[in-house]
Amino acid sequence: MSRPNLQIALDHNDLEHALADVFKVGEVVDIIEVGTILCLQEGQKAIRCIRGMFPEKKLVADTKCADAGGTVAKNVADAGADFMTVICCATIPTMEAAKKEVEELQVELYGDWTFEQAAAWREIGIEQAAAWREIGIKQAIYHQSRDALLSGETWGEKDLKKVKKLIEMGFNVSVTGGLDVDTLKLFDGIDVYTFITGRGITAAKNPVEAAQNFKDEIIRIWGQ
Ligand code: 5RP
Image 1 (cartoon, rainbow, N blue to C red):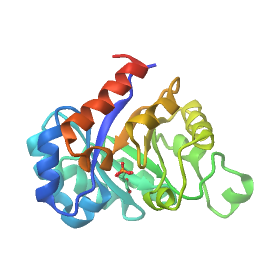
Image 2: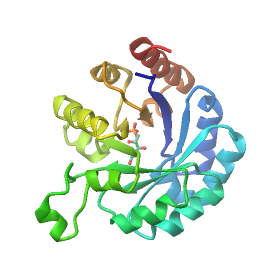
Image 3: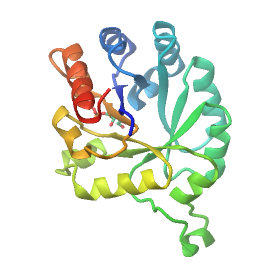
């Protein structure tokens, strides 16, 4: 089992504040994400600036793309992104088109989705996790939405079961949504690919210390 990556999500409303935070913690984390909010606000400009600051880091554009996958993926790749996200309800053709343009495509899991291609669903064109593997998608992001967490959802056994099953299916699974350092121990013994945290770092009094605390806890649980 390898050590999970630590990814910072830059969900800032403006580029200036995102750059100030990533300047401080960019070297501590393994992967940098231009978050959905920042993508919507600043688009390619944000990706280009951060790629310029960190030429060697893996860079994710969290577009949560639902359509026009090829165009969106080409745009983020041209700006310097390595990975891009699509929403799990996007069609297979959208995912296939996006996948051609980026190093890796990540399926972002929200709301209702299924593990298998149930025959009844296939008939009406709904194809899910098994179909994503069939077209060669390697990464899935298991997400507790901000809004679900705000309405009282918490991380628990139900999430661990799904994360484990996705890993068994061959996905590299990232985990995200309101994570704090204490949440990580829930995943002890599970081969998580990446922990993605936004506010756990960016809203901390000392973001560098917060990023280091996440990193130290990952190393404590999974080793170097
Ligand atoms: C929201 C996201 C966030 O980037 C991700 O969930 C991390 O944010 P936080 O740790 O602040 O919950 O994808 O759509």
